[in-house]
Each structure stands twice: as C-alpha cells, then as structure tokens.
Length: 497
Image: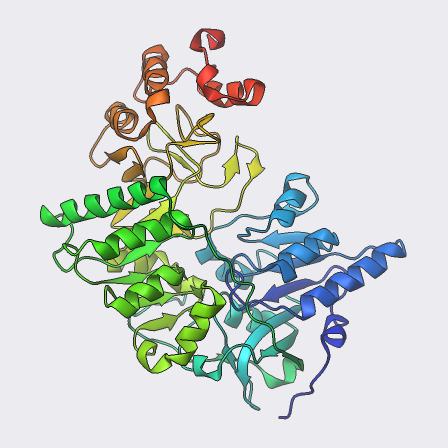
C-alpha cells in the first residue's frame, strides 16, 4: 500500500473535540512534534468562536513542549495520563484546569487495553521508516506505541528524517497477552530480545504520513555540583561495600536509575569506582552519562524505554551504530518497567525523592502535599520489586529553609515497606531489617542536615508512643511552619500540642 502524504494541518483535522489521542514516545524522545501544534491551533480557533475543544492524551511518559506545553497553553487538554514534566502543564494541573491521572508507567498500556480509560480515537506515531505493509520503525523511544496503534481507530505517522534509519533494529517490540491468557515474559538478562524490531500497524488504519524533519526536544540537565557529587559518591561507596560483604554478587546486578543531575552524579561515581565491575542497566531512561560509560566499557549493556539524551549524543549513537547495536535495546514501558522482570533480574533501583520521612516513607511527586511537581513515573514499578531500592535527595532545599527529611511525608508515593536505603549528601541510612524506631534513628543520624537534626530528635521525643510513634497534630508541623513563616527551622513543637 502507498500511504498518502499529508500536511500536519490536515492530519490534525481528523482530531475532534472529545477525542482521546495516543502518542508515541517516552520523555521528549520519540514524541510527535508536527501534528500536535496544529491541534493546538484548532483549539485556539474553536475557543475564539466560543466553541469547546479539548482532547484526552495518552502517552508513555512525559513529552516535549510541542505537545504538553503548547496544548496546555491553548487549554486543549481535558485529561492526561501518565507522567509529565512540562512547567505549563504543571501550572494548569495545579490550577485545576486539567484532569491529570498519575499512574505507574508499567500499567499505562495494559489499563488502556483493559478499557479503564475509554477508547483511543487517533494514534500519532513518530517513525524513522514505514513499509507499505504497515511496519512502523520507531525512533528514540518505545513508550506505549504498539498498544495505541492497535486500539486506535485511525493512525497518523510522523516520518521524521531527523532520526536516522540506523535506528531500525534497535527496538524490541513485544506486547504481552491480557489475563487470563498472560504468560511469563521470557527476559532473563537485560540483553535478551523477545519481540520484533517494528510496530505492526493495520495499513487500512493509517490515514496519512506527515513528513517531518524535527529533532527531539532534548533536555540537558545541570552539571553535578558538590552536593550531588557527594550523593553519588555515597551511593557508589554503599554499593561497593554491599558487594564486598556478599550482599550483592561479585558480578554485580543490573541498575535502574532515574532522570536528572543526581542520577548523572550517581552513574559518574559508579563509573569511577573500579571495585565495582562493569555492569548492565535495565531501566526506563538512558541519559548521556550512560552512553559515555558504555563507550568507556564501564556499562556492558543498556536496556531502556527511551534514549533521553542530547541531540549531539543521539547523533553520535546513530553515527556509531555498529558499536551500539549489540549494546542497547529499546523496549515498551510495559516491558522496561515490568515488575516480573525487575524482580527476576534483581534490579538495584536508584530514584530521587522530594522528601523522606523519619520512618522511610517517600514523597516523589507533590510539594507540600498538594502541588504536583512531576509524577510518580516508573519509580514505583522499580522500588516495589527491586533487589535493593534506594532513594536519594539533598538533605535540604531552598537554601536550607526546607528539610528533605521530615517527621511525616506530606504525600505518600512509596511506603516504608518498599524502601531499603535513603541517601543524602550527609550519609546513608540502611533501613533493611529495622523496626520503625530503628529506622528513625538511622535516617535522622545519617541523612538529616545538621540544622535539622535536633529538631527531628525533639519530634521523636515529642511523639506519642506506638509501633510508629507520631503526634498527629504535629506530624506536618514543619510543612505548616514553612507555609506560614517560610522556614522549617522555625518550627516549635509546643505550638502543635
């Protein structure tokens, strides 16, 4: 079949008010960049006429400004799931303008298939190549592409020449069966390939191909600073010590690492620590630091859902695909974040917290309990099923006015039952095998900033007795003090009796 080449504007005209659209990609990597701005123009035009125009959006994770940003600014989004990082989207959500469903990334595709979120009217997939029989070769991310392509009534392909056809063959597309027919997913090491290198789309559903030449809206992260470097060093030293005492096998175990400057600092420290052997990664996102370590031979293989790298780094991969072809694989989020595989492989998970409480509960999504920062992403998928689950964060924020270690988290994403290790630049709290009271001692002593240690110890003394001591009237007093006075250090427990 010869597919019709259409403009981005014509493609957008197929999207109607009330539709749900599914998008390829995972982070800004591999997401549509031409059709969604045209959808935003339709929304602006309809709104200027006094007509409603909003859509629901299903993605693998966050997208770029050409989707979440421009559609938020034009008030074109009614509903959105799952993870996002765009600042304009965040403002709209916190203003109550968008119905945002923050779910675990491993569940997104299957919940669409189960019918939990309604139908998919239109899917938009970014591709580096498409064949006449509907084989779609994705670009820099897996996301939920095969699921939305199968469920959608209509499919639009953005054929993006900014992505090299050398990408063909890097993907491993595999969609599990739904219950009660689901079987084990046969991945037994990060490098296993179990699927196809393309997404098969029914050619009759493809309404057109939009020719694009737009690079990914790549994000660059701030360079490590003394605080993040110390956090990274603490992680590397902890893992090396656990390996030395036989907790971690001498061959080491695959790592999962989140996104950002702390993650980069951690990977840099692990790369420099040669008591840790070259290791593999089974993760959802690969950043520039991982590619550098693959080139250095410190990372042997990377299984991921997304190449969330700078455009220069991505072009380097394309130019050197003979080297990378047997060192990288791109999967769907349903597989990269699959709990069965994470537990089987013995993944060591390393994610970032907004705050941790003295018993090991983690808040990774909300500021002061109600304002969404990003989303839970895949951190829960990995934390709950990891061989060792680690959370990192600086001990303080806002020039010391906020403590990242608090009596009780203002929003709970990961409970104490799933969190093994908390690490700040101050040190390491190993929570394994400890009771709640023992965990509080480890976290306050090893992870809290000196400005807050006595305040936290005073809370422990102030708290009522019990298996997990708390005084309900005072458990969020540090947050309350910050909201009232702008500095958690001004907390007076006597005010909250």
